[in-house]
Each structure stands twice: as C-alpha cells, then as structure tokens.
Amino acid sequence: MLRLVTRNPIATADPVTVAEVARHLRLETVEAQEAMGYVATAALEVEDAARLALLTTEVVARGEPAQVLTLPIGPVLEEADVQTVELINPDGSTVVQTSGWGLLAGQRAAIAFDETPDRPVRVIYRAGYGGTEADVPADLRHAVLDQALRLYDLRGDVDAPAPLCPAAARICARYSRVSLGAA
Image 1 (tube, rainbow, N blue to C red):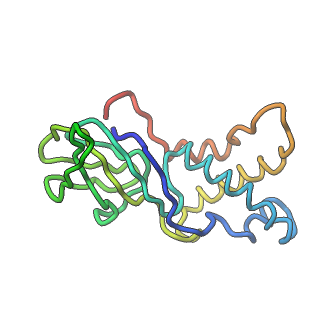
Image 2: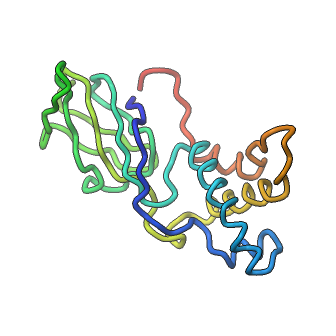
C-alpha cells in the first residue's frame, strides 16, 4: 500500500452550498455564510474518516515495491488521473515509468505493475469526485452537513473535541477501507 505524502486541493469550491448549510443548520443566509468555516473543517474530517477526496485534489503517495499498490486516497476514476508513476533510486532521484503499469480505477483504486518494481514507488495522481459540489455524492454531502451541524452546535466547547457525528460516521464507514497490513 502506498502512504500519503501530501494532498494539494485543486478545486476551489466547497462540497456543499451556503443554501444547503442554511437549510440544514436552520440559519439565515448571512449566518450560514459565517458557518462555512465549520463546513471546511467538517469536510476535512469526512475526507479523513473515509480516506477520500470530496473535490478534485492532487495526491502524492509513496510506498515500497509491490505488484499492486493501493492508492491511499480515492476515488481515482480514470488512468488519465494518474499524472506520474516513478521509481525512486537509492540516491533520491527518480525514474518515470510510462509503461508497465495500469490503473485499477474506482473508489479503492490501485496501481498494478506488470512486474514488481525493484525500488520504492512514488505516484502523483488526482483523486476526487469533481470540481463542484454537484459532483460530490449526496450521502457524502449529507455527512459534511451533519458534521458541520455538530461542530456548529458544539462551538466554544473546550472540554472535549467534537467526534464524528453518528450519521457522518456511518456514511464514512461505507467509503472507508480497512487494512490488515500489506495490500
């Protein structure tokens, strides 16, 4: 399995609209705009729990050689989303692999090599459902809204951090991956 090195958001939209936040949190539009900070935090928490990108994000991942390397953040929907597959030399330099691998696309995408590489691998790819809130699946948007509601309701509570709310946790569980070691 590849390990996440960095995530660099590409899309600049929010995963839900201000109007959805106003309805879900029962706020006036002006208050909902002020609550969008809670949405941003909620979206990060949903992404972390489900190990995915809601909106298009560039991901850099690195891992030890294996015939099949599971990408740490999904979804990856087409081979064109994989920008670079590189082998890492002992001196830190890299060799780009333009062939000898293929993408197993989907929610739990992976890179499959024709032959197991003889060196560590770095993959740079785009993950996510798209560039706008309309591209994000409805259930994940609901998870973000429910978590934003929890964060908003518990604002100022310094006794304990707000855990993922039950509805968001159930939704994220459908998308998350369970790993029992090497993939």
